[in-house]
Image (cartoon, rainbow over all chains, first blue to last red; front, side, top):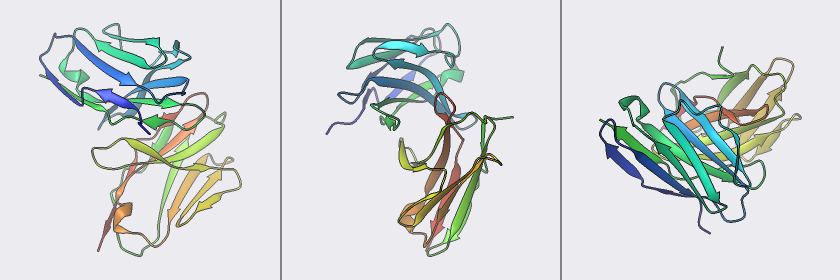
Length: 111
Length: 107
């Protein structure tokens, strides 16, 4: 069975550029989560969706970050404009119950 | 104070040793608790849920102390393959992850 799919796996960009991260959740899961992980702050929840509707975006750092889930099988996290402090690993996770299944992550480096 | 606190380690133990990690949480309304495992440069994966009465899964035992608001994970007979970072997770209304405790098992 396919797990959570994320793309790209690695992204290197320059400060000021737009970055779009993509996620395909596990089929049948109705909740989707975006996390950011850094050495200093650990794993932080940015936003989560339930049945494609954003439920809690209190973790989104600022207006430069936005997330969408146009349908049950696709979500995007966009950073515009990107800054060096956005460098981190971004994980997408999905769940059909209480257990969350994580994707492999996108390693983002903003120069 | 962080919502979930863990000793970052690293804990360096020989194969066969028993090792225990603790984790404290601040929100007394937390209803469910988990341990996740994260290998280097990989995604977190659920290791086990933590139940009020304590629970065991093979060499792994998890305990919950609601009065003191801490969770523990005990690993018996450590294997080299247990080397990873162990994340304590609590759920007051959404999953809150600790920053993890790193375990290194050596031959």
